[in-house]
Image (cartoon, rainbow, N blue to C red; front, top):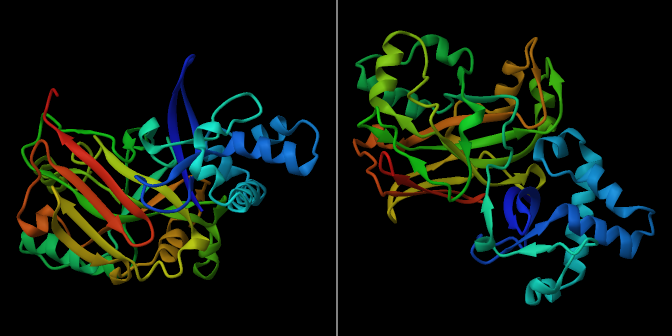
Length: 342
Protein backbone atom coordinates (compact mmCIF):
# COMPACT_ATOMS: atom_id res chain seq x y z
CA UNK A 1 0.00 0.00 0.00
CA UNK A 2 0.96 3.60 -0.54
CA UNK A 3 -0.23 5.55 2.49
CA UNK A 4 -0.03 9.31 2.83
CA UNK A 5 -1.04 12.30 4.87
CA UNK A 6 -2.93 14.99 2.97
CA UNK A 7 -4.75 18.22 3.66
CA UNK A 8 -8.04 19.14 2.05
CA UNK A 9 -9.97 22.40 1.98
CA UNK A 10 -13.65 22.20 3.04
CA UNK A 11 -16.33 24.87 3.53
CA UNK A 12 -15.52 24.83 7.26
CA UNK A 13 -11.74 24.91 7.01
CA UNK A 14 -8.73 22.75 6.16
CA UNK A 15 -8.50 19.24 7.52
CA UNK A 16 -5.66 16.74 7.64
CA UNK A 17 -6.42 13.10 6.78
CA UNK A 18 -4.63 9.87 6.03
CA UNK A 19 -5.11 8.48 2.55
CA UNK A 20 -4.43 5.61 0.19
CA UNK A 21 -3.09 6.18 -3.31
CA UNK A 22 -5.47 4.40 -5.70
CA UNK A 23 -4.56 2.95 -8.06
CA UNK A 24 -0.76 2.92 -7.73
CA UNK A 25 0.74 5.00 -10.56
CA UNK A 26 2.43 8.38 -10.47
CA UNK A 27 0.53 10.99 -8.45
CA UNK A 28 -0.62 12.84 -11.57
CA UNK A 29 -2.66 9.78 -12.61
CA UNK A 30 -3.90 8.36 -9.29
CA UNK A 31 -6.64 9.14 -6.80
CA UNK A 32 -6.25 9.92 -3.12
CA UNK A 33 -8.78 7.90 -1.11
CA UNK A 34 -9.78 9.11 2.36
CA UNK A 35 -9.16 5.93 4.38
CA UNK A 36 -11.40 6.85 7.30
CA UNK A 37 -14.41 7.74 5.14
CA UNK A 38 -13.90 4.75 2.84
CA UNK A 39 -13.62 2.28 5.73
CA UNK A 40 -16.78 3.60 7.38
CA UNK A 41 -18.69 3.14 4.12
CA UNK A 42 -17.21 -0.31 3.58
CA UNK A 43 -18.27 -1.43 7.07
CA UNK A 44 -21.75 0.00 6.58
CA UNK A 45 -22.32 -1.78 3.26
CA UNK A 46 -20.43 -5.04 3.67
CA UNK A 47 -19.63 -5.82 7.30
CA UNK A 48 -22.84 -5.26 9.19
CA UNK A 49 -20.90 -3.96 12.17
CA UNK A 50 -22.83 -1.47 14.33
CA UNK A 51 -21.66 2.15 14.44
CA UNK A 52 -19.26 1.88 11.48
CA UNK A 53 -18.06 5.48 11.79
CA UNK A 54 -16.88 4.89 15.36
CA UNK A 55 -14.93 1.83 14.23
CA UNK A 56 -13.39 3.85 11.40
CA UNK A 57 -12.46 6.71 13.75
CA UNK A 58 -10.68 4.26 16.03
CA UNK A 59 -8.81 2.11 13.49
CA UNK A 60 -8.13 4.76 10.84
CA UNK A 61 -7.61 8.06 12.68
CA UNK A 62 -6.65 11.35 11.07
CA UNK A 63 -3.00 11.24 12.17
CA UNK A 64 -0.50 8.80 10.64
CA UNK A 65 1.43 8.44 13.86
CA UNK A 66 -1.74 7.39 15.72
CA UNK A 67 -2.51 4.96 12.89
CA UNK A 68 0.93 3.34 13.13
CA UNK A 69 0.64 3.09 16.91
CA UNK A 70 -2.42 0.86 16.46
CA UNK A 71 -0.29 -1.66 14.60
CA UNK A 72 -1.60 -4.62 12.62
CA UNK A 73 -5.35 -4.05 13.27
CA UNK A 74 -5.09 -0.62 11.61
CA UNK A 75 -3.02 -2.00 8.73
CA UNK A 76 -5.60 -4.74 8.23
CA UNK A 77 -8.40 -2.16 8.08
CA UNK A 78 -6.45 -0.23 5.41
CA UNK A 79 -5.98 -3.46 3.44
CA UNK A 80 -9.73 -4.10 3.62
CA UNK A 81 -10.28 -0.71 2.00
CA UNK A 82 -7.72 -1.53 -0.68
CA UNK A 83 -9.37 -4.90 -1.42
CA UNK A 84 -12.81 -3.28 -1.53
CA UNK A 85 -11.60 -0.68 -4.01
CA UNK A 86 -10.08 -3.43 -6.14
CA UNK A 87 -13.47 -5.18 -6.23
CA UNK A 88 -15.04 -2.01 -7.67
CA UNK A 89 -12.89 -2.23 -10.79
CA UNK A 90 -12.74 1.09 -12.64
CA UNK A 91 -16.01 2.36 -11.13
CA UNK A 92 -14.29 4.60 -8.60
CA UNK A 93 -11.71 5.87 -11.08
CA UNK A 94 -14.35 6.77 -13.66
CA UNK A 95 -16.70 8.54 -11.23
CA UNK A 96 -14.64 9.79 -8.25
CA UNK A 97 -16.88 12.81 -7.65
CA UNK A 98 -19.94 10.59 -7.13
CA UNK A 99 -18.50 8.62 -4.22
CA UNK A 100 -19.28 9.91 -0.75
CA UNK A 101 -18.84 8.75 2.83
CA UNK A 102 -21.54 8.21 5.44
CA UNK A 103 -21.43 11.88 6.38
CA UNK A 104 -21.46 13.23 2.84
CA UNK A 105 -17.69 13.72 2.59
CA UNK A 106 -15.77 12.87 -0.58
CA UNK A 107 -14.16 9.44 -0.63
CA UNK A 108 -11.60 10.26 -3.32
CA UNK A 109 -9.70 13.32 -4.50
CA UNK A 110 -7.52 14.14 -7.47
CA UNK A 111 -3.95 15.12 -6.53
CA UNK A 112 -4.59 18.72 -7.57
CA UNK A 113 -7.43 18.92 -5.02
CA UNK A 114 -5.26 18.18 -1.99
CA UNK A 115 -1.98 19.26 -0.42
CA UNK A 116 0.56 16.53 0.25
CA UNK A 117 2.02 16.58 3.75
CA UNK A 118 5.01 14.59 4.90
CA UNK A 119 3.74 11.01 5.47
CA UNK A 120 4.28 11.16 9.25
CA UNK A 121 3.88 14.77 10.40
CA UNK A 122 5.76 15.59 13.60
CA UNK A 123 7.22 12.18 14.46
CA UNK A 124 8.62 11.77 17.95
CA UNK A 125 12.11 11.50 16.51
CA UNK A 126 13.92 11.95 13.20
CA UNK A 127 17.42 10.49 12.85
CA UNK A 128 19.65 10.71 9.78
CA UNK A 129 22.57 8.33 9.26
CA UNK A 130 25.78 8.35 7.22
CA UNK A 131 25.45 4.88 5.69
CA UNK A 132 26.99 5.16 2.20
CA UNK A 133 30.76 4.72 2.03
CA UNK A 134 31.18 6.53 -1.30
CA UNK A 135 29.40 9.66 -0.06
CA UNK A 136 31.31 9.51 3.23
CA UNK A 137 34.65 9.14 1.46
CA UNK A 138 33.88 12.00 -0.92
CA UNK A 139 33.00 14.28 1.98
CA UNK A 140 36.20 13.56 3.92
CA UNK A 141 38.23 13.85 0.72
CA UNK A 142 37.01 17.46 0.44
CA UNK A 143 38.78 18.03 3.78
CA UNK A 144 41.86 16.01 2.76
CA UNK A 145 41.05 13.41 5.41
CA UNK A 146 40.43 9.65 5.29
CA UNK A 147 37.23 8.08 6.61
CA UNK A 148 37.66 7.75 10.39
CA UNK A 149 38.07 4.14 11.51
CA UNK A 150 35.05 4.34 13.91
CA UNK A 151 32.77 4.87 10.90
CA UNK A 152 33.26 1.20 10.04
CA UNK A 153 32.45 0.14 13.61
CA UNK A 154 29.09 1.78 14.22
CA UNK A 155 26.36 3.50 12.17
CA UNK A 156 26.59 7.16 13.17
CA UNK A 157 23.70 9.61 12.90
CA UNK A 158 22.46 13.03 13.92
CA UNK A 159 19.03 14.00 15.25
CA UNK A 160 17.13 16.38 12.97
CA UNK A 161 14.25 18.75 13.57
CA UNK A 162 10.92 16.84 13.26
CA UNK A 163 9.03 20.15 13.15
CA UNK A 164 10.52 21.22 9.81
CA UNK A 165 9.67 18.09 7.81
CA UNK A 166 7.81 18.94 4.62
CA UNK A 167 6.00 16.92 1.96
CA UNK A 168 5.79 16.39 -1.78
CA UNK A 169 5.34 19.62 -3.80
CA UNK A 170 5.96 21.80 -0.73
CA UNK A 171 8.15 24.83 -1.49
CA UNK A 172 11.56 25.14 0.18
CA UNK A 173 12.45 28.66 1.28
CA UNK A 174 16.12 29.43 0.72
CA UNK A 175 17.63 30.23 4.16
CA UNK A 176 18.77 33.83 4.21
CA UNK A 177 22.05 32.88 5.92
CA UNK A 178 23.42 30.59 3.19
CA UNK A 179 24.93 30.95 -0.25
CA UNK A 180 25.50 27.21 -0.80
CA UNK A 181 22.18 25.35 -0.97
CA UNK A 182 22.25 21.61 -1.63
CA UNK A 183 19.97 18.61 -1.99
CA UNK A 184 20.71 15.10 -0.63
CA UNK A 185 19.24 11.96 -2.21
CA UNK A 186 18.28 9.53 0.57
CA UNK A 187 16.07 6.58 1.42
CA UNK A 188 14.02 6.73 4.62
CA UNK A 189 12.40 3.98 6.66
CA UNK A 190 9.47 4.57 9.01
CA UNK A 191 9.24 2.59 12.23
CA UNK A 192 6.00 0.64 12.65
CA UNK A 193 6.08 -0.58 16.25
CA UNK A 194 7.67 0.20 19.58
CA UNK A 195 10.89 -1.59 20.44
CA UNK A 196 14.00 -1.51 22.58
CA UNK A 197 17.25 -3.49 22.35
CA UNK A 198 16.15 -4.96 19.03
CA UNK A 199 18.41 -7.67 17.53
CA UNK A 200 19.54 -7.15 13.94
CA UNK A 201 17.80 -10.38 12.91
CA UNK A 202 14.44 -9.11 14.14
CA UNK A 203 14.76 -5.46 13.08
CA UNK A 204 12.93 -5.81 9.75
CA UNK A 205 9.76 -6.59 11.72
CA UNK A 206 9.83 -3.02 13.05
CA UNK A 207 9.79 -1.33 9.63
CA UNK A 208 6.34 -0.09 8.57
CA UNK A 209 7.55 1.14 5.20
CA UNK A 210 9.83 3.33 3.14
CA UNK A 211 9.81 6.82 1.62
CA UNK A 212 12.08 9.17 -0.31
CA UNK A 213 13.98 11.78 1.68
CA UNK A 214 15.67 15.02 0.62
CA UNK A 215 17.92 16.30 3.40
CA UNK A 216 18.31 19.89 2.19
CA UNK A 217 21.58 21.39 3.37
CA UNK A 218 23.08 24.85 3.79
CA UNK A 219 26.63 23.74 3.12
CA UNK A 220 28.56 26.86 4.10
CA UNK A 221 27.16 27.13 7.62
CA UNK A 222 27.18 23.34 7.98
CA UNK A 223 30.93 23.35 7.32
CA UNK A 224 31.48 25.95 10.06
CA UNK A 225 29.35 23.96 12.52
CA UNK A 226 31.16 20.70 11.83
CA UNK A 227 34.57 22.30 12.38
CA UNK A 228 33.42 22.77 15.96
CA UNK A 229 32.63 19.01 16.19
CA UNK A 230 28.95 19.72 16.80
CA UNK A 231 25.90 19.84 14.60
CA UNK A 232 24.73 19.90 11.94
CA UNK A 233 22.16 22.39 13.19
CA UNK A 234 21.31 25.46 11.10
CA UNK A 235 22.93 23.67 8.19
CA UNK A 236 20.03 21.20 8.13
CA UNK A 237 17.14 22.19 10.36
CA UNK A 238 15.34 24.58 8.03
CA UNK A 239 13.71 21.85 5.84
CA UNK A 240 13.80 18.12 5.15
CA UNK A 241 11.38 16.71 2.59
CA UNK A 242 9.97 13.20 3.05
CA UNK A 243 7.40 11.61 0.75
CA UNK A 244 5.47 11.53 -1.41
CA UNK A 245 3.98 8.68 0.65
CA UNK A 246 4.87 5.74 2.84
CA UNK A 247 5.15 2.52 0.81
CA UNK A 248 4.50 -0.43 3.12
CA UNK A 249 7.38 -2.84 3.54
CA UNK A 250 5.48 -5.76 2.01
CA UNK A 251 5.42 -3.92 -1.34
CA UNK A 252 9.20 -3.57 -1.54
CA UNK A 253 10.73 -6.81 -2.83
CA UNK A 254 14.31 -5.83 -2.06
CA UNK A 255 15.14 -2.54 -0.30
CA UNK A 256 18.80 -3.31 -1.07
CA UNK A 257 18.21 -2.98 -4.81
CA UNK A 258 16.39 0.23 -5.71
CA UNK A 259 17.65 2.76 -8.23
CA UNK A 260 17.91 6.29 -6.82
CA UNK A 261 18.07 9.37 -9.06
CA UNK A 262 18.00 13.13 -8.70
CA UNK A 263 17.00 15.56 -11.41
CA UNK A 264 17.40 19.33 -11.20
CA UNK A 265 15.15 21.19 -13.65
CA UNK A 266 14.80 17.92 -15.55
CA UNK A 267 18.55 17.29 -15.84
CA UNK A 268 19.91 14.08 -14.30
CA UNK A 269 22.51 14.94 -11.65
CA UNK A 270 22.64 11.81 -9.47
CA UNK A 271 22.16 8.11 -10.20
CA UNK A 272 22.79 5.47 -7.53
CA UNK A 273 21.39 2.39 -5.81
CA UNK A 274 20.16 1.82 -2.27
CA UNK A 275 22.06 -1.45 -2.09
CA UNK A 276 25.43 0.33 -2.12
CA UNK A 277 25.07 1.42 1.51
CA UNK A 278 27.60 0.02 3.99
CA UNK A 279 25.05 -0.06 6.80
CA UNK A 280 21.54 -1.57 6.52
CA UNK A 281 18.39 -0.25 8.17
CA UNK A 282 18.33 -3.39 10.30
CA UNK A 283 21.76 -2.51 11.66
CA UNK A 284 20.70 1.09 12.21
CA UNK A 285 17.59 0.00 14.13
CA UNK A 286 19.60 -2.37 16.32
CA UNK A 287 22.14 0.39 17.05
CA UNK A 288 19.60 3.10 17.87
CA UNK A 289 17.51 0.81 20.06
CA UNK A 290 20.36 -0.07 22.41
CA UNK A 291 18.88 0.98 25.78
CA UNK A 292 16.69 3.48 23.87
CA UNK A 293 13.11 3.05 22.71
CA UNK A 294 12.03 3.39 19.10
CA UNK A 295 8.41 4.46 18.56
CA UNK A 296 5.92 4.08 15.70
CA UNK A 297 6.37 6.92 13.24
CA UNK A 298 10.05 7.51 14.01
CA UNK A 299 11.98 8.21 10.81
CA UNK A 300 15.45 6.92 9.99
CA UNK A 301 17.26 8.40 7.00
CA UNK A 302 19.92 6.38 5.19
CA UNK A 303 22.21 9.29 4.51
CA UNK A 304 23.13 10.33 0.99
CA UNK A 305 23.81 7.78 -1.73
CA UNK A 306 27.19 8.10 -3.44
CA UNK A 307 27.33 11.24 -5.64
CA UNK A 308 23.79 12.01 -4.48
CA UNK A 309 24.32 15.68 -3.68
CA UNK A 310 25.76 18.81 -5.23
CA UNK A 311 28.70 18.90 -2.82
CA UNK A 312 30.12 15.76 -4.44
CA UNK A 313 29.45 17.09 -7.95
CA UNK A 314 30.58 20.71 -7.41
CA UNK A 315 27.12 21.83 -8.48
CA UNK A 316 24.82 24.00 -6.41
CA UNK A 317 21.11 24.70 -6.30
CA UNK A 318 19.76 28.10 -7.29
CA UNK A 319 16.52 29.90 -6.38
CA UNK A 320 13.74 28.66 -8.62
CA UNK A 321 15.24 25.20 -9.16
CA UNK A 322 12.89 22.20 -9.30
CA UNK A 323 14.37 19.23 -7.43
CA UNK A 324 12.96 15.79 -8.24
CA UNK A 325 14.18 12.72 -6.36
CA UNK A 326 13.04 9.30 -7.56
CA UNK A 327 13.54 5.90 -5.96
CA UNK A 328 12.40 2.75 -7.70
CA UNK A 329 9.08 1.60 -6.28
CA UNK A 330 8.62 4.70 -4.13
CA UNK A 331 7.64 7.37 -6.66
CA UNK A 332 8.95 10.90 -7.15
CA UNK A 333 9.47 13.52 -4.44
CA UNK A 334 9.29 16.99 -5.96
CA UNK A 335 10.11 20.35 -4.35
CA UNK A 336 10.91 23.80 -5.73
CA UNK A 337 13.42 26.18 -4.17
CA UNK A 338 12.08 29.65 -3.43
CA UNK A 339 14.27 32.74 -3.22
CA UNK A 340 14.82 34.33 0.22
CA UNK A 341 11.86 36.47 1.30
CA UNK A 342 9.72 34.93 -1.47
